[in-house]
Image (tube, helix red, strand yellow):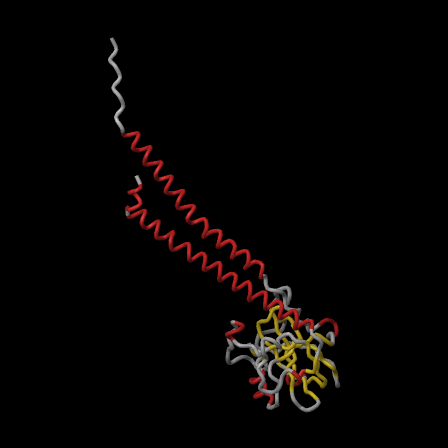
Length: 264
C-alpha cells in the first residue's frame, strides 16, 4: 500500500519536505545571529550613552574615522559657533516623521580646529527647495557644547544617495572630509549631535536618543522557524496516513458485494 510514495507526485512532496527542514533550521540560526548582533549593539549603545562626557579631541582628530565603540559617546567642546558657514542637510525627519533639514554648524575650537555640530531639525518651510531655509542663530561667543559623537555618514550605511548639483549650502550627507575641503580648515573626523545647551524656543529641535533595536523579535522568529521545521515531518506523516486511508477506502469500495438471494 505504500508504493504510492514512489509516484512522481509523492517524490516531489518528499523532496520539498526534505529541503524545507534544513532551510528552516538555517533561517532560525540566522535569526539567532541577528538577535545576538542586536543585543550586542543595544548593550554597546547603552554603555556609550551612559559614559561620562569627555573632551571631543580625546576621541577624534582631523581625518579620524569614528569607530563603532566611539559612536554615541558623550563629548564636550569649548569654542564658538560659525553660523556664517553653516549648511543644512536635506530630507531629514523629526520624531513625528515630518520632513525638513538638519542644521550643521561649524564649531571653532580654541586651537582653530573645527568640530561639525548637528544642532538639530528644522522644518522645510522655505518658499522653495532651492532657497536656504531660515535657521535660528546659535549661541554667540564662547560656549561649551555637549553632544553624542557620530561617524561620518555614507551612502552604504544610510541608504541616502549623495546627490550632486544641490543648491548652495545644502548637502545630503554629513562628511567631515568634504566639509574640510569646503571650509579650508582642519575638521575633526565625524560630527556630534548636540544635546546641550538647549536651543532657544526649542528650535532647532534636538535629535532624540537612539532607541533599542527589537532583538526579542529576532529571538521569537528563530523559535518560529524551528517550530516550522519540526512541523514539516509531522505534516508529511499526516499526509501519508491520509493518503493511505483514502486508498484503503477506495479499494474497499471497489470490492464486489455478495449477491443477494432472489425473492420467491
